[in-house]
Length: 320
Image (cartoon, rainbow, N blue to C red):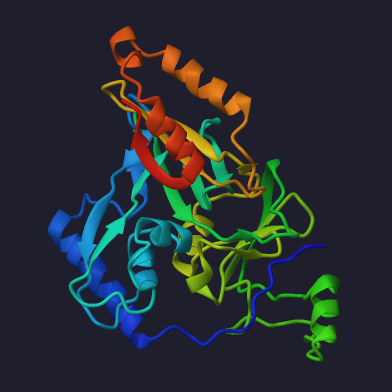
């Protein structure tokens, strides 16, 4: 039985909490009550792209790149890819930080929860009332590391647990025993619990979507197969998702996007298996291009496409 195992971590710094609250208040003041939290979007009437990439400036010497990532709804690998030359722990006051806040929606049914492990991101499509504009919420996640792959396929939620206890599985016990540090039979709710304060059980034995006591690891491949979310994010999802919600776990390392102007975009990630771009991936791109008007199709930059596929950087790049 797999489980998400993390070592106990020191609680977050007071300065980080102050930074997060100040940033939220600033955003609220600037955009008013109709503004949406980072990662919450109305679905576009045309196309499949939401959000936008933008730049922010580091305001305090104490701010880390991970603080900024959390404040803007992105994870570890996303913020590192977007800012490869910026210090993770001391970016420095006044530093310009790129926020990769634009997303191509996965090419699957927009229902319930979609988890794309290739991009370490969860998409939640809440049910809406008649006449209400459909929307999506997207959050960075942590997934299984090598040897503990997060399983793919369609499943559903079965139970929600607040302040769950954690029972270390046999694989964790064996590893800990080899280190001479056997774990307790059960870890009660509290700061040492690797499940955090909220857990959503899936209809796959041993797998959960849950919080964490090590939020700096969100956006990394570090769990034993479970899906980790930042404590704030899992709380928001936990309060909305009823039992029986569909969960579609996919591995979509190449995404094609288009906007209202019928411009084509490509976003390529390195998949969990470090797989090479296959012929089917290329055919998918060509087929999408064939749907465009002739004057658009003839302007596709195939050199850009090939470089983007080779890099697998996760950057959204225009092909026209």
